[in-house]
Image 1 (tube, one colour):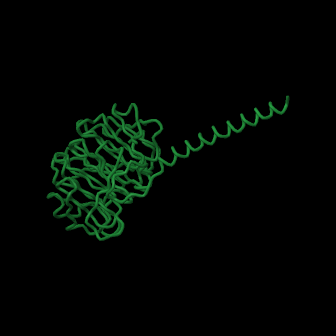
Image 2 (cartoon, rainbow over the protein chains, first blue to last red):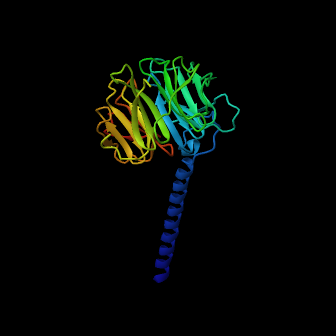
Image 3 (cartoon, chains in turn red, purple):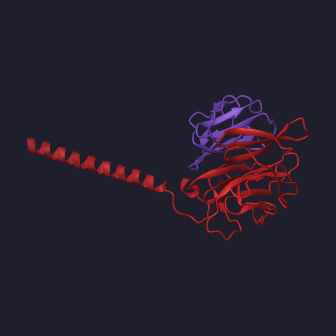
Amino acid sequence: MERPLGNRRRQRRVGHFMVRCVALLGVLAAIMSGVPRATSAAEPSKAAPQNRFEHVHALTMDADGQTLWLGAHTGLFRSQDRGKTWTGVALPVTHAHLDVMAVAGDPRDAKVLYVGTHEAGVFRTRDGGLTWTVVNAGLKGPDVHGLAVDPREPLKLHAAVRGPGEGVYRTTDGGEKWVRVDDGPAGEVKVLASVNIPTGMGGIFLYGGTGEGLLRSPDCF
Amino acid sequence: MGGLPTSRTVNGFAVNPEDSRVMYAGMRDGLFQSRDAGQRWGPIGKGLKDLAAVAVNPRRPIEVYAVSMDGTVYRTADGGKTWEPQR
């Protein structure tokens, strides 16, 4: 009487074991399907983006509300599906590594974007990222931590430079020539933005996200 | 700048282009919104933290994006009431 019962128990145990194995394989397959795989900078990725970016610095959306641009430790990326998938965008540099610190778009023209980098200054595209021009004339240092496009005059920008040549620079011709205009805010600049709020002195305010908090200054310095 | 965590790093900043008084600041502590050009701030986006950057859709400013330092992108389509990670 006991043996058949024992056999049934063994059979049930074997059955349960098989069910657990199948379930475990299912879980493993699900996990593996979500593991990010290495992709080249130009390949779109549906995998979790963490490994691609390493560290995110900047984000903006183009004037048409269609494309997100993201600056990261591993370069420049864009998404055209609201941030679900990202494609690496190559910039014309000889550096093996490019750390994109700032991205700022023209508020009237979705094809115009400015990119500030840690190593190589400012790049500009006027064709939605197909071709890029280095626009560094007048910048005294390559480490650009913030870029702000004036919402009223899109050819006017401010750039925050760290390290050599540190300070705030201004261009009024879309980056063709930069002039240093201020020492800049205290603390490391993380983000810079021109905000269309009149100062009462003929200009608008420049906001800076920094290591010391959020600061603002009239941009007519 | 009342309402923002004091003396803490502001990593991300974005403005509603249709109403420049409406601003967003992304910090390690989370996402903060001001409706009076930065005089007062309040937290929005419960659960968001370690933020690196923020962006507003200029064509539809109730659509806001926040991205964490490790690259997770969050989106709200209702001005910040609800947020969804983008996957």
